[in-house]
Structure formats: C-alpha cells, structure tokens
Image 1 (spheres, rainbow, N blue to C red):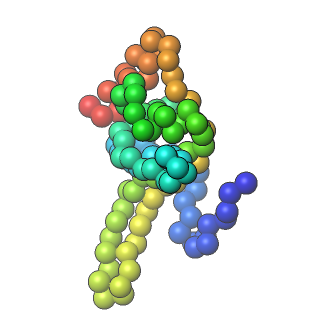
Image 2: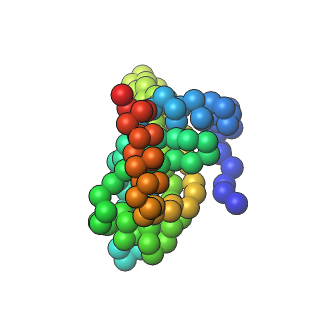
Length: 121
C-alpha cells in the first residue's frame, strides 16, 4: 500500500517504532489542506495500543481538512544529528500513516485527554 523505505538499513522494527512513539511527546500531523495543498501542524500526542491520540481545538483548519479527507500522516523525530564534515544529517524518526477520526463523545474525549496528561507528566 505504501512505498518501501529506500534506505533499508535505517528502517526501524515495529517495536523500535513503538518505543520512539512512547518516548517522544510531539510530532507533525500532515493533512490535505485547502485547495489540496498539504497542511502540517505540530501536535502533542499519546499512544494507546495501535492508536495515536491528539488534542486540539474544536474548530480549525486541521479538523476541516480531516472532515474532507481523513487520510493523514504523522511524523515524530527522535534523533536529529548533523554531521557537518559529511554534509548530512542522521535522523531517527517514525512516520505513521492512517485515517483520522474526530471524537465527539464527551466521555471518550475526557479519556483520551487523560492519556495525553499521563504521557506528558
């Protein structure tokens, strides 16, 4: 469904990806924005099982975009090491692809908010 990673030796295992997602506290969500332009926004997140949770306002560009097209990607950078003498940067990151769902049930929203609070305290 998605392209294979070109630099295979840098590919992380599923377990390593989950570890990075559990360790880090923020990432960048990408959606299809207005006029089909990509729109990215940094967000705090939590992970529970195979699901990522984001907290945001009840209105805005991000939610409008998700309502139109729920396909998203989310990128978390764990390592960003610049190697000046080689004109390169070594990254350790995770990119997740999925479909976003807007949660409207108040109890479910509170439960999700608690996962965010627990992760970031």
